[in-house]
Length: 135
Figure 1 (cartoon, helix red, strand yellow):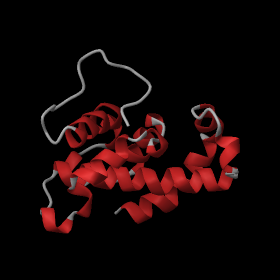
Figure 2 (cartoon, helix red, strand yellow; figure 1 turned 180 degrees about the vertical axis):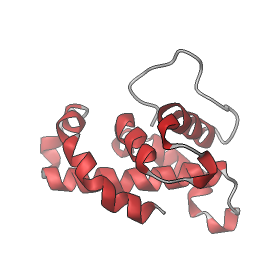
Figure 3 (cartoon, rainbow, N blue to C red; figure 1 turned 90 degrees about the vertical axis):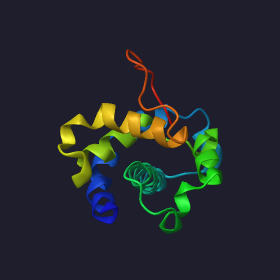
Figure 4 (cartoon, rainbow, N blue to C red; figure 1 turned 90 degrees about the horizontal axis):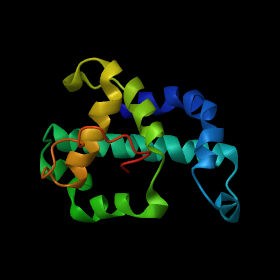
């Protein structure tokens, strides 16, 4: 499911690269090319979406190395975070049959991320929150 999304999302993420670069303070110290950054956004974004979607639809824990606490912690580390608008766009173009239409991606992916990161303790993003990122 996400491999197809990853391949089709490369041009979309390339179109957002200027906005992505603005989200990071000191990218130049890592010597990333624009292509490296696009690849990282697509792969990491698809990984994160797959983690939260699988957690939400309750795949078997033994099938999900992503469901453990250390992965959840790693996603919260600043150096592992990607701009939330990238996740929203990747989620929008990803076909996830369990979630119906693609057009409701913004609110849904936020709620999925909060649900995943809090291990189900928080079910949805508080009403009115419109911050730049969750992850």
